[in-house]
Image (cartoon, rainbow, N blue to C red; front, side, top):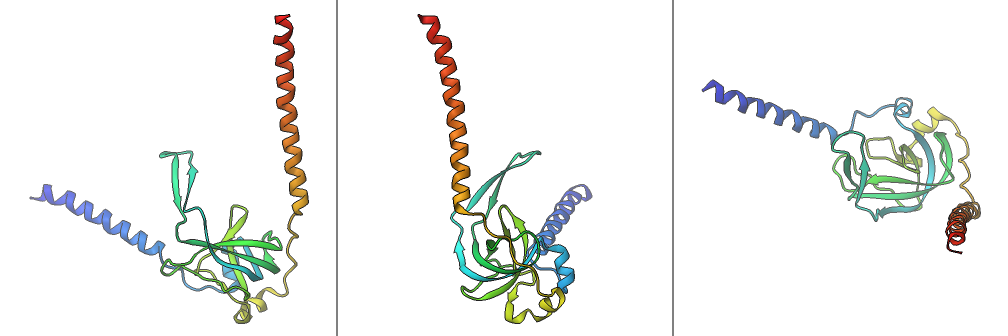
Length: 197
């Protein structure tokens, strides 16, 4: 009887342990002071919401790993992004207009921004923007007195790169690519064209 009971108890212990990990992952840590929270964030900034809670057009993204299973499908199905016109920065390289990815409907961690309202945002780096949840000290700026007192006035954001500069950069890369392809084609034509004649 004990031989059959032992595997069942092991399976039950593993199941309980994984459920506890899942439960802990879906809840936030205890509320921290602004200085404690700043240690965990990659960026802290204040700004006005220009675009609020826009649904992300991609529901899934494929990520490659160095270890098995090598391919991992990340699910961003219930996440949104909000775009901010940044006015003050206390931590991180934050541009004047930046976006923040955030869950909106997940229990405990979902957070929704209101268009036109100013917020203080604590966030982690996420690709070329940031991500945040309700676990951080995100607040309307009018309710962020403790944070503003702890951090002081802040610094201005980094200006966004000029769109003209971005277009010129892309055109330069395209021109170089076409020049390399053209040079290779010309070399092949010259080599094989001369052999025929």
